[in-house]
View 1 (cartoon, helix red, strand yellow):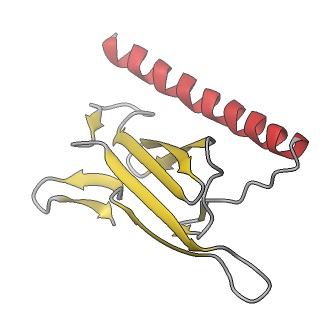
View 2: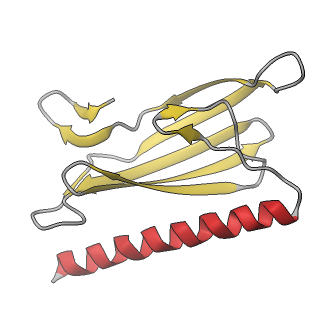
Length: 141
């Protein structure tokens, strides 16, 4: 019964993040502000969130896993994020949570202009897939 409620909460969080993403995009269009993707498939981009804004993402991974992340633009050129998830959250089987929340930080060093693209430096500790305790890492890093 406890597993049923935790799955229900995760599905609710997934739906809420989808609605928040659409709402944020609509707000950006009305304020003449363009939001750029933070990732293109699995590749991070050099774009950062505007100061005072945030984003949420939810990713489905192998072994019925879900991974959620929250990112915030805390300064004009700096974003911080945190993510957490686990496996067997969607299907049947014993739910296995990741060992700890993971972090992300990105700083925009050079803004895009007519002569140069955005240049950013950052770090993200979140891997994908199940966590292997023997190797002390995620399946995909």
